Image 1: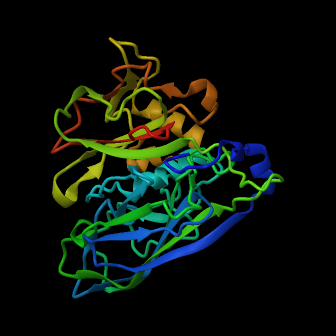
Image 2 (image 1 turned 120 degrees about the vertical axis):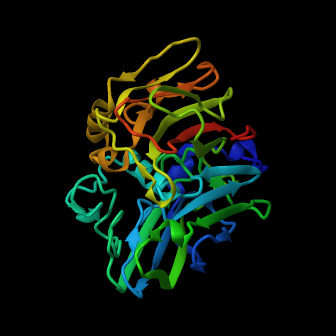
Length: 388
């Protein structure tokens, strides 16, 4: 039971879902560290954990002149890592750079998982233009200032952002949820703040956050007692993992074939998604998922077996908009090979039998590259006791 000793007769999913109750509870309040700081939050040891919600609130103060925001603002304000019961980095978004990433990867995954969650009609400024499609923004949030915006005037701007960290793959069946009702449980959330210089740069002004905080809350399910006096739990033999990787060597014009890290028997690949970032320093930004930028996009395994191939970036963008009800591939450059969106039992990819799994990304010769890098995220499910 994910490293925790629980009597076998207590595993009764039907009885658990009949008797359990959901609880949403605040866990920690942490003051913003000013950027480039890591916060550590240990979660309370109670119930069964399904989701962590991370909220950032504060006032962005621009003083002394104007300043520019990078592509990392605001959804790349931090990265996060989650460790549970001896499994290191069950969730690891990587640290965000000036191109974004970090928590931005989790926002993309949330839109992929919940096709009824949409950014359509939510106005935000990206690259100096007001956008109402593909922003990955929510109406309940406040960005304060736009992303990749130049000449931001001095003043105070309210910021309110919320990110969902999916410990369980799904809150209905709780695959990947974690048993906490014991003193031997150990669950730790790391928040890796992005340095301010990678969020705001240039101009004559300075940027700082006033009265800014991180708020950590959780969604948990109570552990009921069955008629025999034993506790009743669902099947918690599976971990759920989301791991981001970055490849900066060997990415260039033409076909790029990268071996996917973390392969092994007993692992099921639910989806693999990512983007190509281009540019140096604070000018780095994702390449839009268009036909002009991308040729064929696919995954391969074995000698040369290629089950799915998208002809070009526009084909991938169109497929993603239909699946996820959002056009974020156009603005954030994401691609996704999704095996869990329609029928998980039918389509999920066994990483043990699909040996030598590789990601194929083709950059057209017309793209001018400067320090390009491939960022990709693997979402897997695997049996407890195996390495993530």
